[in-house]
Image (tube, rainbow over all chains, first blue to last red; front, side, top):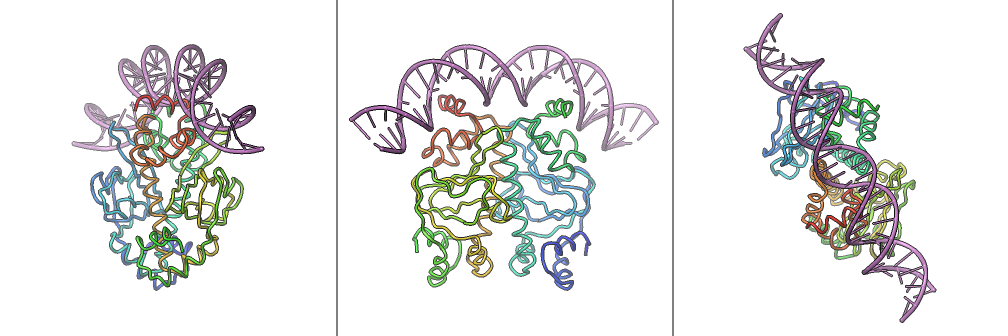
Length: 189
Length: 189
DNA sequence: GAAAAAGATTGCTCTAAAGCAAGGTTTGGT
DNA sequence: ACCAAACCTTGCTTTAGAGCAATCTTTTTC
């Protein structure tokens, strides 16, 4: 049982060691290389991932071939394409590791079994959805109608990890600007 | 008990008449005029609303005074500032009726009581959060890096109610363009 | 550790959409 | 039904950021 997963549950629920050991038995540790894919567009997402080290990126490629990054899951966070996991439809987004990473993987079936039958996981799932709601509301309001320099400053303040650990190409696709523009913006910081 | 609320629960859960009657007793019908506010920026949100007729708009005003509309709840939908409801923090967004509307209101306390104690409401809440997740993922991917004409076409296809029932000013603030631009775009449809 | 590939920077040009102004239209209040 | 206020449209100007090309730098691979 990984101490990062343990803390994650203990910070958010009252759960005893026995239940923790039980539910953690459903997670399987996997190692992924930099730039490896855990899900590709068109595939149905069958797993939820909890990042132990490294990070996962959720992104979409539009018809013009333009990449759009929606979320980065760093260590200590869950990350998956919940839209595909929930609906069972093929995913429109990719899940890719951006660094050599270790993640815990749990199957969709097991995850939703625990959501129904293990109160702590029910709380965790609600928590994930609520956090996603709050984060996305913030992102919509802070991005729309705001110029790119302000968005960059927002990122620096709100998500310093994204700015410090990831390449400009990824940051640009997160901010919704071209790498050219991002490069220029950095001169104005 | 309102038949629209009844259908809402029956479509999403297995719930009997008795439990339905019980939980519906927590909702109180209120009438609001066009352009009336149910929540203003800075206030803590204390209610969840279910729209019977008319519609509610969730929007934010940024420091430049620019309005940004995030969500429209039409009849048969729940709508509130969940971020403020969940966190207990003052809301950064307004809730305003855009038409003469009838809504069912349930207090935050009662709502979360039912989420914990009435399985159907627990399912409904999860359902609301999951839908919000799916909708917002879609919106982020379909809006970012896409020009304004394509966004307008998307709206027409995905949310015809927004296009048909609301003023251009509101539609523009939903699409993230100025009313000038929207007016011109409509010539290119 | 060298070659290749991917990524970053910067000058220049181009374009989508913002911003302003003025005139026309619709809506709402009394 | 009338007046005021809000809203919509359209011509003109300005601007933020896209797109391309060339060069430089860092990272990956064998």
